[in-house]
Image (cartoon, rainbow over all chains, first blue to last red; front, side, top):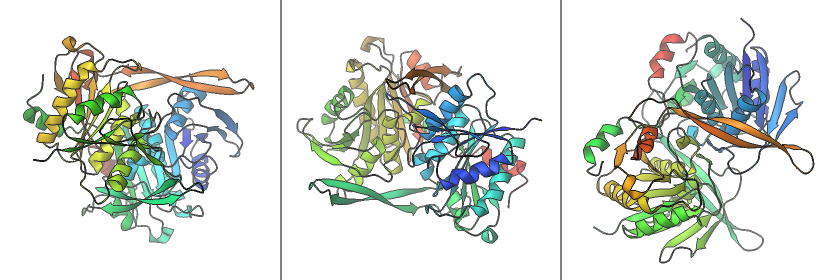
Length: 259
Length: 259
């Protein structure tokens, strides 16, 4: 079998330490192509560039690796990689996104550019994994994640994921010795409760910083929050069908206004 | 029972005809608060403003209606409405988003700022509906949608939605007489295949316009694409738990690397 082709994306931007670590691991596993945002795109969710133009520039940041920086969102990067850089060429065997500086557990999966890139790849039919380290610091230590990233990616390359599934992998911000292994989880039931810090600019006009407190309602032991709190690497299989299938018969029974 | 409090959001921006139509209908149903983006935010998905500031300005655009324009994304607007404008006050009985200029059927739900606002409200535990008209024109005719919007919102106000569910409602771009009624649907299995139109700017540097072709793989008659093509108003109940629950036992069986 020829070497796998691995597309690497992130949302913190092409210069962030997280993507550097990810590229280092992926070079051991296959041929690597990087298409990553040219600036931080945290919290971009599944945004795409509509009604505006895109730029793409070749980058020499990664030794021996073909790389591009893109002016768009993480989801744009996947689209440009597939339908421009690799147009009419061999498509990636796996798409890996990250390593994100900060947690993408639970509800954060919705806001996450890292995971949106992975989900975009899953829509395209490519196995995809988003990796996040639960440490927001720019000096975060990724060393304990590398061996797991390699194992998980190898697993995905040898055993295809179920169709339409992307993995949301989170790492506790712990030393290697503390980690207890990998757990397959569901997305925890939790949310952010925002606060708005109101300030005045030098011209006396109001502006706001949004800050949030994470509130976990989930008492289960099969979810990603529990796994991270208990020193496991959490793996949540995610899908892009948002249909609340259980609600369809309820609405069909309840609603008197159907045609 | 006192009049319901209705929060109105959109993603095309506070000046768009779609939100004006929505506010007009909602004024018949309850007390209305508008918090909408101060510029178009199409394709913003579930983006939120991270690492940057937000502005909020009172608006007099809607007669007799308290309204604010916000510098953030549709999801930011929901957060600012709940946790700033309505902080420590009565919270909305329903959140309605739109009416979007353009379809949000099928996979477009992921890219849609309209639906992300609705899903953000569902995360907060508020019944929520995103309305979209399958017509991208700025001169789109909304007249056939108004009666349905009223009926559907009344239905949601009188019969609560299942917990954690937001509705994705799409209208065919047809005359009123052509419409056959409302159908509860699942999200169709379809995707966008992008093309990149490469051009040169006046300085000779490359830039791109992303264009896309919608490809529908779905042969079913219970999905939103089928409904729209057959002149029904489509209603897809959506959830924010992205877990591919069916994949959990598969991964637990297949993977040899679990701790």
